[in-house]
Image (cartoon, rainbow over the protein chains, first blue to last red):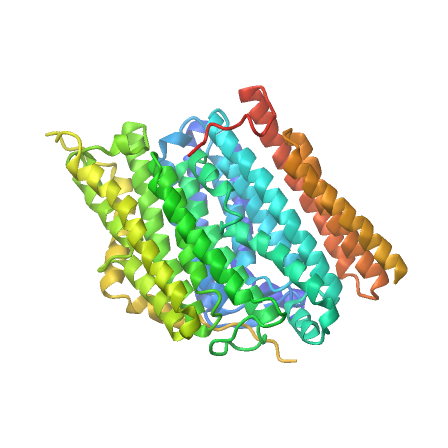
Length: 496
Length: 101
């Protein structure tokens, strides 16, 4: 579609751009103490964007002369991103860590991040892939280091910028080789010319792929590109930690699925159990081993943590591993399973981080010691946190169980060579039981009981309910999620 | 074709130097310089492929966009490093190590 025609189908992104500019201008006109208003601009803007996205529904086409696509798959991720941004924006008003700072830029940057994530979910051109990943990265660097006076946040920003710039540089070099091999930046043309390559180019192709994998792996914090994750997650403002652990990860999976599916699979509609079979290198095995390494490392290190925030950071590495488990079998069922998992993961992980924020606002700490006896002092928080921990472990009847169930069943239907992945995943879930239940044990069985009950602020209770109810509900009645995912499993396919 | 190879060779050397710089340097600014080398190596690749590979202008466009994004990234990175310097009086990436397991 040409540029002018595309604008008609580009409403969500255009609205977000207007929201970003409005937020900037509003921020200029108000005092520091009232900068929460900018958050309202963002929240209302995102709601309008959600309506615009909803209206596009099933349109499937490419925009801006094959730069980005509009298809139900992208729409699914856009709605997921908006949902997590809304929850995080509302909680940001309540986060005491941000009190000393002007929040105008914070919400504006969050808006730009949303725009970048939208483009990530829909790009089908190497140029757009690089631009969108960089937009998301640069905004995340600033947000991670947003607490200017807090040396821990400074350090998080520094580590993020060093690792982020390095890995996106490596990815860019890989993209340049891929461009040289195929002569185009468009996914469909690349796919076509790769099919015509002879064996002499396979060494260069493997190298390019490994480099690109480094960039993508860094976005979803897969081993061995995860080193930034724990430090950045611990140092960043907790709202941003929650956001980084959900939205960019979802968009990262979107970009990986689209890239491997449209460039290295057949480029057509998802067939059953197709695998990445371009070169002699055993890609399914490599990705499988990376997935196993990711979740095992995440779980084993999470056990040793003193700080709950850092424990959750490692746990989010482990969850990226569970989702990666499904990548080697790139079939319709596994993409489906990853998308279901992402919906469940959004609610349970955001919820767990929101509990950390509530407790930090009250006690000022985020280590296990600060949670002693908390279940008796703040019963609501205790119960909700227990639910999130159950769900993150993957026990029924919670959303986490359904997510894991879909992943493992997709693996098993992929054939007997993937059974070992499912078995390792199961063992890892058992390991994670230990540290998730450590939280529950500390909250209810340790410390002395206090007679006075403390209620969290109403807004926080509301948001916690908004995450806890889906976690419980989708554990019992998950049809809405499954239907939504089923309807979103339509990729744009170029017929050549 | 020979010309293309020599450009690719230069790009590969530049890339390796950049990776070496990022890994060995502990000064925040020096690490950033390593990253810039990597980005420029990729840029040389893009332009060389575009010029000698008989391709369209995609490579040139990519190169220009990379320059813009590299500038944005460098601006943010320098701001973060200045902030670190103000708070901790050092720009050594190893000395910023309060966050540990």
